[in-house]
Image (tube, rainbow, N blue to C red):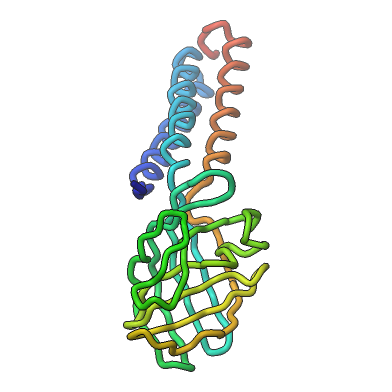
Length: 226
């Protein structure tokens, strides 16, 4: 079963750890701390960076912003890694406003999908709620939502379906009570960015700290700094 990870505590602990290590480095530079203590502190932080990506790799949060033809949709998408360049969308937040149909409201949780083609409750939409941040997965053609099924969620009492047309172009469909309100509004993806840190970036920093620890160990031989 897909699940979300809370990144707040992780980021808070990371910030606190960086602060403490900065203190240790300062004391060592001033000659008030043995080099071994500095090495130990760096090793502890390196271990944190090595463990953190394991937790972070399971889930990612993205900010999105669609607009065009009187339509405005923006918020966040939480998605769980499903393999390759594909994620399963587990949560969507934000607001929708459509001046053409009068649809307006807060976006609620998406319909449950299991990486296969599903049919909406009104029977009007196909969806799989898959996300490809790079747009490189099969049937995505450069869009973050696939071009065959798309993403389905509720907003303002409507079933909202968005699917990719390739690149930054998307089609928006709205339905209520087994009746189409709008089927072919073309909107653009104005912004799409990662909110939570990428695991590779954290791992790269951890690797750098490990290298620094090794260099200090080779140069000092465990002696105190004078």
